[in-house]
Structures are given as C-alpha cells and as structure tokens.
Length: 101
Image (spheres, rainbow, N blue to C red):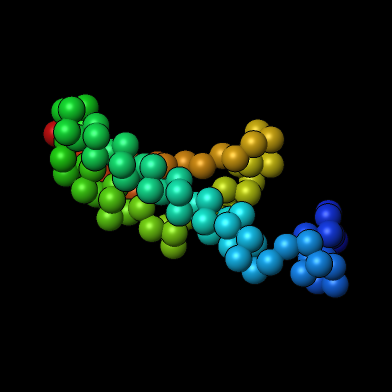
C-alpha cells in the first residue's frame, strides 16, 4: 500500500493519533451516521405523508452497514471528487415508493 499521509503509515500512525480517534474518523463511523440520517429522514417523511410508512420501515431495515458496497462507494467518490453515498432506497428493490403505494 502507498501511504498518502502519516496516518496511513504502519510505522508512524500511532505517533499522531490514538485508536479512539481512528474510530471517530473511520469509514465505518461515517457510514453509520449516513445510515442513521437516512432512517431519521425516512421516519419524518413517513410522518408527513411524503413516503409510505412501509417505505420508512423498509429503509430502516435496509440501513445496515453490510448493505453498503464499499467498492461502489469508493468508485463514485473518486468519480465526483467527494463522498458519493447512495441511500438504502437506491440499492434495495423491495422498498415501496410513494408512487406505487
């Protein structure tokens, strides 16, 4: 692996950060916040009647880190130059839409 910074270095990384701070800034933590946002947004949209309640429930069920395709996320991010997160609705076909409910 090519190191882009000291934080990537197996030799130097412990000099500049702690395991706790690595966890704070980890991809897993970031993805967990994205998923939490999607679940909360869907819940509010369901409450307001923007999407069906069943869709919000399906999004909550689908919003699991294992459902995130890291390679696809990385490719999209590299293509657009920023985080390119696709919501659970974009990769789950069994989530009812507001138009077909």
